[in-house]
Image (cartoon, rainbow over all chains, first blue to last red; front, top):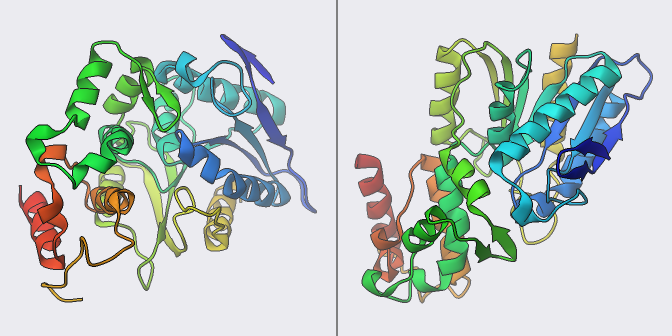
Length: 268
Length: 60
């Protein structure tokens, strides 16, 4: 438990192990709502693989998520950003290494936002990053109106626009079993995976169903923007299933291998 | 599949949640946002109607 404002944050610490000396450290930032549950196994597998390669990993459950204090409805976007920054500080103090921040999906948006709160900009690992927080919020709201999308004409629907308006007026929405509060929704809405002014190293990994695997057109455009801003981006696409949303819990060994080899280059 | 291959009503697996997944996948792949009033059953009538919709979003 990391003692922070609002109560303890549940963390799992995987100390660097393996035959060689410790070479680095990483903080894992989980995604939003159901995607967090779906991806638990992959996060654990990657954390163990990094640990075995000499990289200590801290997995933090953000306020109101997983086994941390608070309810989902107690969280706000800025609290989550601060949680990530605190996790980085703890791990740096503990290991002596400047940790890189590894995010999955909306966790990448939080990772980028946390950079501004840190004393020095960390390197970043993006797993299937959400590029637009607004798009991600729209997709979450759509879960509640899914049944109406194809069954009714446009005018007869209680659509996502109405749900957005409710959030903007301060109401909490119950969506897919989660209490979506304005403090989270509006922060997500404004978040964007924009290039950082600081020049950092980024491992940008996507799971692809194309043969051969390729980054999506949207990701390729954003990678170019990060490179143009001066960051050193390694784009990697691997074959596999979208484990953060599949019905059955899925694994993607190629992603773990590619991630470990990308970050070990930083630690060399 | 061809342009006139029917989708909605012809593929049993394509229920409302599957339609949402298709929309989500297209949004993330191409980097646009779909508003509710831009789509209805006719968007998902055939492969061709869906392709036309994506082209209109990319051209917008």
